[in-house]
Image (cartoon, rainbow, N blue to C red; front, side, top):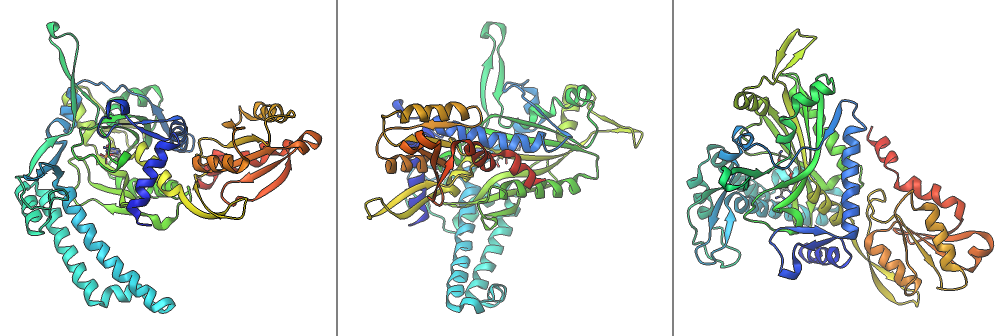
Length: 517
Ligand code: GAP
């Protein structure tokens, strides 16, 4: 099945099974804003716990905060967001559709890359085990020709971005003959900059209202609390401050479901270090973060680092962790070496000294910062994309069937255990409730007595429940149940007293964190 079709199915599945709903749906929705349903919120909370605990429990020198969304407007002047938090936009005059000029060019680069990869895949099939990919890439004429095209376009694009040259961005779009996907024409306007921050007013207008912004990143809340945390926590450099919270961006080209939203959530950590050591820490955090992603078991081949073509105004090194979504490799997380830009700017704009006295050096300095920044929603999309499977199975009556199963890492699954009485009588529901009552404070359990056992298993597969236990008449006699494992669909007969141990072992964060250490 084409990846596009799989993605459509995934979006429909997320709605049908209470993971993600369009915001304000009964009013025809609000663009690029989404709500999380009963299963979505559990999965999202588990993702946040995985991140939070891996930062503040695993690292003695990382602490958390929760800063307000509204902040003094001068913060955004100091950080550069008022003047430079822009996207280069271009309109197609025929369809009247608006696009990000940089994204149109990135998609063109991805098309060339796709051509190269298809050549390589074809050759790999043709030559089988004898295939030497490196040699093929270095010698095949079509691959070399496309690689040259890619390099030339990439260099031109990177230069235009770094120079902030909007005319050149437009010229690239024209030269590459990029057409509007809606009208199919190449009738483009000029490229213009568009600021992404939402603004509102605080206080009554009569008193002179203050123009405030909805924060476009949580990071600034950390920077402006640097002194508070360092002093009250007696933190010694190097140390980090972590935060999870909402961020808002007036994204013009908001597409691909929860990949690019106008209201989203970030998990950010600013790590404050001695000047001159930031690039070492940058490498270390790159490795730590990649390990965190890969520990979920979605396959290391589905991740890569992407080095930024253009460094943000505050950075001296930056990479993205990219994941292979059904629509291609895309950014999930950014890791940035932000120098001392933000703290220096806040020092200047606030007039307050923001420095660290280093007892080892016997001097004060403005710390440098390495940031790790990941979107909760994008991580959610990574998890559901990697977990969604359609499998051919043989049903109870011997016929071929398809089961949709979310092979979520058990630790992240919204429901860990479903307890299913075989029939709604003979004391089986009561026994099932008894089991739930004994386990419900250990993990999220769900009771279900409606429909056949087969249908109930399918419902649990669809939301990614790793364990189902069935209560039958034998349970009443010997206190054993049938436990069914989601991924293998295998079943075992086990004592009720064994359930806590079997399930805890699989759904424990502790095990994940031990692997990360
Ligand atoms: N403080 C640095 C910062 O905000 P960013 O690369 O703009 O850097 C970090 O954003 C992460 O936030 C991204 O890697 C992505 O996961 C998430 N993110 C950014 N914009 C988003 C949007 N419009 N919708 C959903 N997630 C977004």
